Image (cartoon, one colour):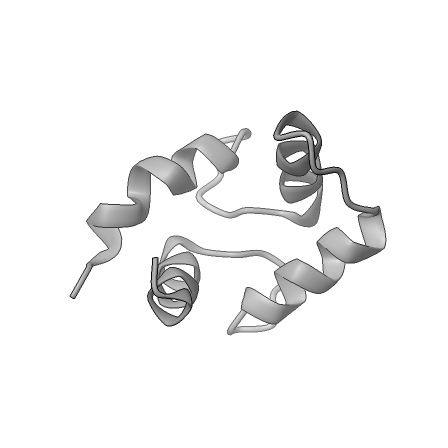
Amino acid sequence: MADTNDYAATFDLVDSDDDQRISAGELHRLMEVLGSPITEEQSVEAVRGIDGDGDGLISLAEFTAYMRAAGS
């Protein structure tokens, strides 16, 4: 089973301000760069779906749990 270290590099790429959290804005920009733009509302909903502690941000632990559940 993968641990957080397995996902840290990907997490760091998305966490553009290096605050150890992924925000809806960072996710929104990532999707634009990847050529699959989503609305700001979709970004907020995506973060909400992954955010386990309700702070409106995705931590590395939450990102890892999501990636494991997604089978990545």
